[in-house]
Amino acid sequence: MAGAEWGGFEDNLQGGGSAVIDMENMDDTSGSSFEDMGEMHQRMKEEEEEDVDAEAAAVDEEDGEFLGMKGFKGQLGRQVADQMWQAGKRQASKAFSLYANIDILRPYFDVEPIQVRNRLLESMIPMKMINFPQKIAGELYGPLMLVFTLVAILLHGMKTSDTIIREGTLMGTAIGTCFGYWLGVSSFIYFLAYLCNAQITMVQMLSLLGYGLFGHCITLFVTYNIHFHSLFYIFWLVIGGLSTLRMVAVLVSRTVGHTQRLILCGTLAALHMLFLLYLHFAYHKVVEGILDTLEGPNVPPFQRVARDIPVVASAVLNTTAKAIALTL
Image (tube, one colour):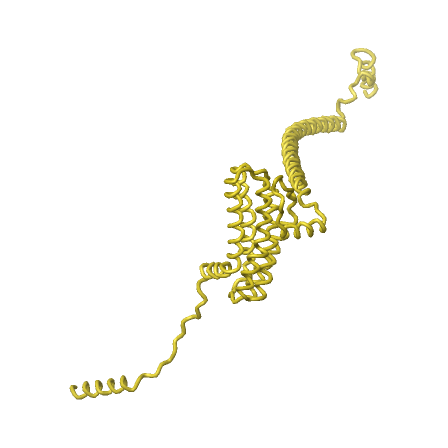
């Protein structure tokens, strides 16, 4: 029976159907779970790479926008830097122009000391020839130094006199007085000279009046140290008069017409001589008045002083007290 069964099995194998498995045509992936997991892992990796690429593209786009903003800010910064450069360049140009303007004044102060000495001596010697215009030095070094010298002499006179100075020496007042006279009177005389058709420039007028202050410096320096009014009047007439006559002679030589000469020279002589009188007699009083105006008079503070009651007053008080006691 067993043989019959096995024989039937053999018949089936040989006849009715083919049970041969074709291993070559079988799909390699059918039934392999490890290979399926490998494919899934590969697919997930590819998806992750695509996501990373998308994120990188988004980051690149944001970076492009940021770089665009940064480029705009950089351009704005360059414009601001360019404007600052232009402003600095203009300031440097102005400074150079100012130096150039100062350099224009250099010829008026380019003078030798021996020339200044000679002009100081000449300022005390009146000129005799007035038929043709006399030469005037066109420099300002000597006059400027004389103005500063006059300021120092005024401060010295304030210290040697009885003037009470509580807030320094009021150098500003002395400088304002001297420079105000020099510049103010020079401008006024130059204006009169223009009206009188005199041949003189503003620089020449400043030089002429500045050297004319040499006599004032000598007179004030001597009379501030030697306090005699008679000595001052002598110096005022001799020294101050000589310097004034020198200026008058120069203006007469440069002015045409008797009336014009009289007006111009008379005004200059009066102002110059009166200014010397003012500096000697009235300047210190004016300074004291300014001090009193700014700071108040120099009055000591009010103090209480104990006083004794007189005997008569004490007797009256005693009588009044007794009368009140009796009435009560």
